[in-house]
Length: 231
Image 1 (cartoon, rainbow, N blue to C red):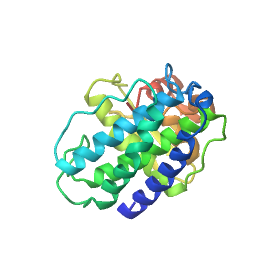
Image 2: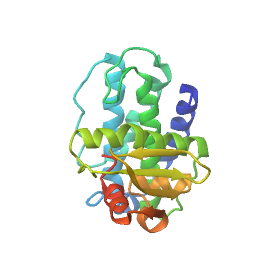
Image 3: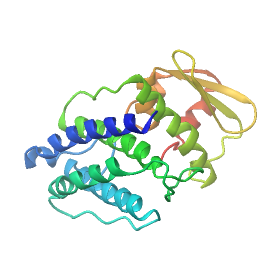
């Protein structure tokens, strides 16, 4: 996807999050289903922290420490920082050298992609905590997010030993044909789902193991799905 496309998705999602952050305190006190121990207010604190961190890295071009969110009124803190964050993302040069935790080349464009999907997944969280239906995303954006999870995050999770080496490979396939393989060795299982089901499932925002079609070694496939494939 082009940088302009990431920016458009990020701006749209951020606008929706800002609306949800202005909900009554009773709603902001609700639990976030996919993030045990977090309230909706705490979720907005996390987003505000990530935004400030990413924006500072883009401006400096090098690693900086992530700031801690406030213990209270975190949604207000998020709202205060959102305009500056979006301005930084809008102004960045995607080709400029910049620290990130992805594979080379390490450029600022990484942060447009990462923040577009970071905000999309947390918009799902905010909808679920608010009792709303999950938001809709375009298919090309969903496929890009699946690629980020399986081609960037999954190898990193294995390299950092955050998930066990499965020993054999599992192919993840979306309805229509696009496929990714996780693990080394021969392919012993495949997991097939729609782009939406797979996108949400890889981030633990749906009952992926119950929805996906699994062929071959089901035990292996379920172990890989539970990974965790993403942080």
